[in-house]
Length: 281
Image 1 (cartoon, rainbow, N blue to C red):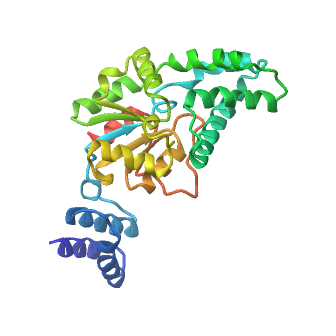
Image 2 (cartoon, rainbow, N blue to C red):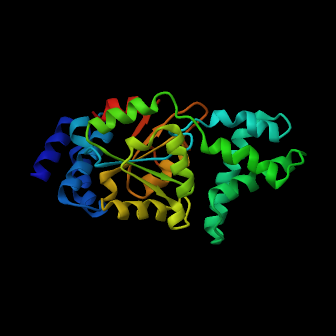
């Protein structure tokens, strides 16, 4: 049935029959999973080569939606004033601080010298301050970051979108580089706790995203195959890591966020959580 169905789809498309046969011959060796997953991948391959994809047949809906937290669900813009004040009025340096924090979280993973995200955030703010000739003490950096980070508001679309996804029966969890206590406080303050079935933090394994082991770990905790889960994030590096780990992926194109051109592209690109709910309904 798999071969017959895929051959029919190939004949309906514009690709040459010999190319379709090559696809049928080699794809089962490339795909990890059950026979039905192989069939779905074959259909996807044919659709992409023909320039059209049948949404109903191509990709099975995920069993679990895994959300990143900061910037994906929570709006970091509210930290501009506190970070800007700490940096001598330079509110424009907020994105640089966040990217520096991500940079040194990867250094922490690669060097196996773990520090939690809050510690890295404070140290990164001091690095940005020093690079911009601003004097900043450790206590001043903590004041600018810790409390504001714990009280970030959700983006306007988040609660409605999550409610719609939950009503459709999806299991919804989070996977964050923040600490367990940190994300619990964030969710409590933002009113997001009722929408999530579980919260996961890389603190438990001390390996930051987008290291592939972080995604493999949460898949093991959830007891699902990679293709049965979808990572949802507003960071190109996050969806790139999840995609390499075999998950379905959705990139939320928040303002100022872009995909990395050299990475595998996500399955979906949406403007907000509501648009994702439209796709997965």
